[in-house]
Image 1 (tube, rainbow, N blue to C red):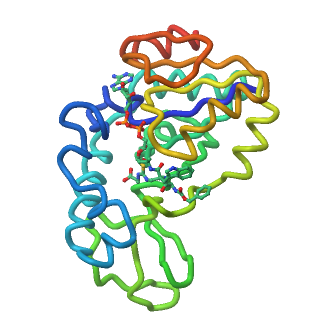
Image 2: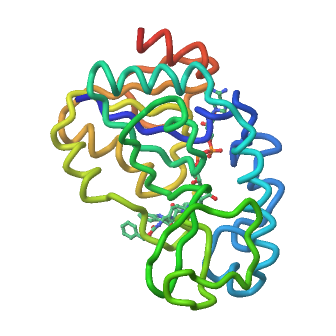
Length: 219
Ligand code: BV8
């Protein structure tokens, strides 16, 4: 199977901001205040304003032809799609088994009992969990210092993949940034589809906007 890791660059042309490009989210917000458990504890309203705004943007965004091409690759060639993105544009493009390793904006999680449900349009810091009643509700996303989802499944998939492709990611955040090295260690070819070389060690690269490079590569 082809293992495809995606990052914010896949959704950039759907109008969703990236993190580290010029004007990116981490240039507008202090990551420690809006993407860490400590930030949530210190100022839940500030953090929820950040996620409420992103959830609204993501809800209005449309999957682009790169999302659609990856959904086709999953359907027709059994590609394994792992995304760092918390938008659900790949799912909305028709992909059936996306692994959201950093969680997803459209869900909330109870920190106390682990219940998950669809996020309301606007989250309030004092929401109560419908399951256990605790005031421990948070966005269902993985913050810095928290364990990403699906690492065992990802490791298994990487060990049986015939190719590793990274789409629209700067290769800055671990453990996702280490997957390409795992692919090299497993002796499989690695390809990067990005606006520009990310600096990661790839055997091949196709550079340009994802809406051009991804459909051209898939089809
Ligand atoms: C963890 C929250 C414990 C949700 C995010 C070594 C091993 C393990 C951990 C670490 C390590 N070293 C450091 C760490 C800690 C840390 C980390 O990596 N820090 C970095 C900053 C150094 N990692 C963690 O804390 C992780 N958890 O470590 O748990 C653990 C212990 C053992 C084993 C495993 C785990 C948690 C990481 C998740 C954090 N949450 N977001 C949200 O709000 O979104 S991370 C954040 O960065 C987003 O999720 C984002 O997806 C992710 C990666 O960014 P990119 O997607 O790559 O986006 P970026 O803007 O950087 O780049 C955009 C790219 O697109 C560029 O290359 C650009 O050229 C390209 N592009 C732009 N436009 C286009 C385009 N390409 C094509 N077409 C275009 N049009």
